[in-house]
Length: 382
Picture 1 (tube, rainbow, N blue to C red):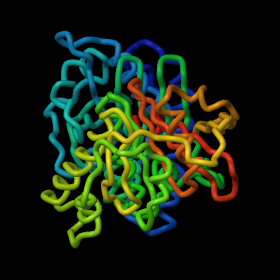
Picture 2: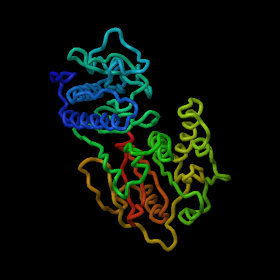
Picture 3: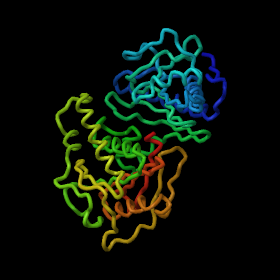
Picture 4: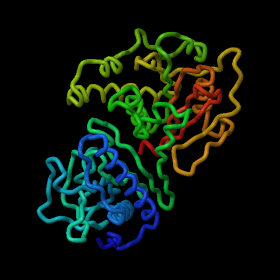
């Protein structure tokens, strides 16, 4: 099969290396699915097809369409493998000008432009809403910022990111990071290693995404629900304590519902937005590990008799990244420092800290180590 030229006529060099790694990733995914006897995966596009689509997406992201930045998601998929697609009578050329023109039609979440090769020419052949598992999706997030991702399983609500490209910077997600002893289950779920499509860790993913989306920054503390030692690390009185505990989110996920029943999904989404929205209030929001809301706007204090944190390990699940040990002040401001102190004092707690600039950090303690770990995960949430 002949090599495709850059669809835009302009090269985007970072796309070549990422395309090769992406092709290898999807080839492994298809083999794993075949061996497991699971649902059929979509066809694996060649590296040159992936590279050409990356290039078209990158140059599209730098254009403007009637003053708007094009927001477009490109799914590399054969027409025969699509469910109820909207098919163009005449396929569109895969050029930045063409993609920018059609981008307003697919700006809403869950809509994708479908791309495939026809007679050695890449074309946009229609739009789709339902994506097969292991289908390569390339999304324009912002000018010069692309994410390569896929849906990992039939009922998954969150796509798994494979790589993030921002200008000349490339971040390829390290899937082996989930095997590290200090990796919390939330990060493993973001890496695509979660065991269930809507288990408790995936609910934390939903909360993390929503926290990041409101853009105000915030802290979510997750504490055991069978005791109150967390009170020793909170300033009293708590300005926005909740009594009795607000249990709607936990009740929804434990209730008897068919997966992806639309009314239930809407209720769950509303409950997630409610809890995540509270993190925009100054102070920390506290929930139990059963998703019962305890309080919001809480101030964190050092636990009596416990030393101040002076070291924290920073990790990011990116290829070729190595952990570094720093003083907690290098993580960020007061919000990060107080979250690290809380997790140090409350061994079984977990903290999610969102910055106004979109960074999100998961703070935890490994059961095998005494040091607090700060996991940078914004590359997994784009």
